[in-house]
Image: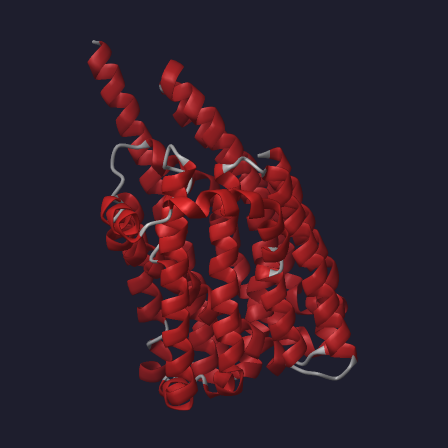
Length: 417
């Protein structure tokens, strides 16, 4: 876990360091195209393998795992080919219906992004199976470096927004070559075990992944990426670029510190559930308090000085992004504190909570972005509505987990009596 954290943390630091350079080479409209492009790729990529890749670490023998990998790759090629044909033939019409006409010239890069992202996920799960954590960490760093170099290099050359899009594809999938090279002997040895009847058999054995994980993943990913798409459709790519930068900047501390706190809390709770379950609630509340104390000061500063800070860091063009960040800072605190608690749902008996949470967020996001059409909201008012919903959502998640932990604690106490 430390090895992977080092790799992902270094990759994120590289991305953070290049943001002020990127925002001075590319316009808000360019960044809007990137935000919409990234959202579409991240929504489609998990669907390309029907989530069968998640089962790669499970088979006891590599031969069975190779059949599972062959199944995922066949789905990837088939779905990728269908996607390429549909976008080539009807791309302009489909993007027009979604008010995302800006993506029409880049349909081929969307296909490459989906194929590359899905293939990289499959190979990293094979690496997880082989416990090749150092290889995974190295790919995370190298593809972040390569993506940053391409974005800056093509930006200097005046290729906007192409540089951003190509750099993003490389940043998401550039580690494929290293992973292939590392596991080529495994693939050569295991390919002789692949048979059509075995592929069909293992597809039936793991049919729960496409049946249950695909809908849940789609709801979760869409709920996370939809705000950028809606902002682009409602207010144009320039406003979407401003909003995308605000979200990107605010997600950095949540992804780095929140994920680290979540891993620590989950590891501690996994131990306590075997020895002293009653302490889990106390540990969770303690971490909540500490994260709250960490999050409040920067959130308050951002609330009052967001436009000034963004103007200084990213350039005068990005003052509106700072205003969006000021509004979103309201939800930042609760998002930051709830992130570790979400992982504790894995320890609770009610595993349907994930699906319920994703459905609630999906419906809420759709409802929020219907307001501009009905109430004539401007972009700033829409962001306020989204921030209010997000605040309520993360508060609900925190309360749900804490109440569930208390119920578990009370149940154990009654059982002891």
